[in-house]
Image (tube, rainbow, N blue to C red):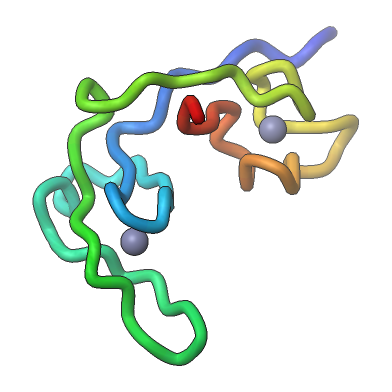
Length: 80
Ligand SMILES: [Zn+2]
Ligand SMILES: [Zn+2]
C-alpha cells in the first residue's frame, strides 16, 4: 500500500510560511516563534496561496514510516 496524497493545508502564515490545518487560526496571528520573537504574520486561507506538492514525500506527508521532515507531514509547500 502506498500512502495516499493529503489535502492541502487550510492556511499558511503570510510571513514565515508556517502551515496550519486549524480553522480557528485563519485570520489570526501566527503563533510561531523564531529567534525568540513571535512571528508578526497572520494565517491566511490556503486559497490565497499557490501550492507545490512536497518533493520529499510526493504529497503524501510521509517518507516510509516517518513524517516527512521537509513539509512536517503537510504534504504541501508554499510555491516559491
Ligand atoms: Zn508566521
Ligand atoms: Zn513532504
